[in-house]
Image 1 (cartoon, rainbow, N blue to C red):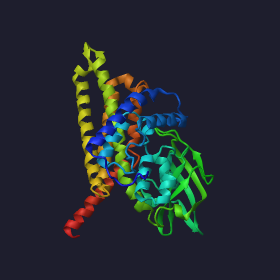
Image 2 (cartoon, helix red, strand yellow):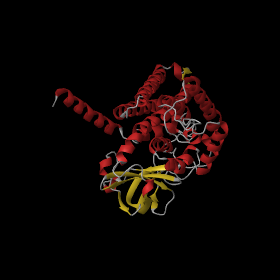
Image 3 (tube, rainbow, N blue to C red):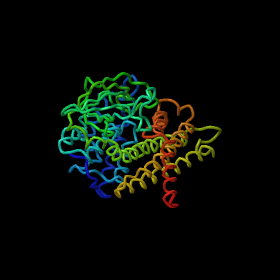
Image 4 (cartoon, rainbow, N blue to C red):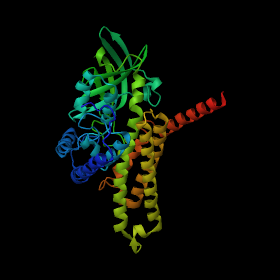
Length: 397
């Protein structure tokens, strides 16, 4: 399995896959939402994730965006399928479509050589391993965050190996991962390396409690101390790291949108059911105009989010990097879904802030989604720079 070219499955097959995934998530995964197997951060335990993956494997919905011949669904097709996995916060974990694995699978399928695909990609596609992407660095040390040019982690060549030193922060899933992709800076520029995990040279210093709780392993702070990586485990050549990061960037942004759209569709279903059953002031909540209008606005925002995702997916399927388009989609979708999640909590009142349904968790997760893969303000700033460049090009300035 490669997870490589976007060969696509066609409309009929895609809908068949999506229907199968939706049935699995609703019927098998949803009952696990109350499973107590969680870590200190309330993230699903490795045991729970492994059990869910085995059930997905048995149901034929493990890594459903990768076709049996190793091809990848088109981005438009992926949107349909990943939305269904997102109907439960546990769905992407069960179906092996969660971040960062999904983005790493896409990247390695696109640019990895045969050896890298066999050694690092195959276990990810088969759901036998988790991965982590080591990019972000501690803000307290003035490391790279939204500005990748601030990267302080360095690498130097030593014979047929590279030696890496630095610190990383908010590394999703680093604790418990078996595959790592490490970004570091050489004299020639940024470099990207594949590494086996765990490695004694990569020390997990701290796993902070964060607002979200859907990603196993949390978001670790790590120290990389004289990590030695064989030269043939570099993706491409020295200095090409950011180029490869761009390959991953837009699809990864968009797949976050796909999954969280599914989560908000489910949250809206729960809030709608509540509003149609709960009585107040002599009638059901849905019959109170204020509540009805909130749910109506949810439908509008959900549809707009879906259309933005489909538009950006079409751009990527056309062969473009879609950097600006994915920024636009990330802003529009994350902000729309934040409104949806907030209204769902509001409609449900006290019930909306408890753990009795997933609505409270979805609200927390969407709040974090507005930050990761680039906060809204960074995307707007990037778009403003493009507006300026385009104006200068038109004016000949």
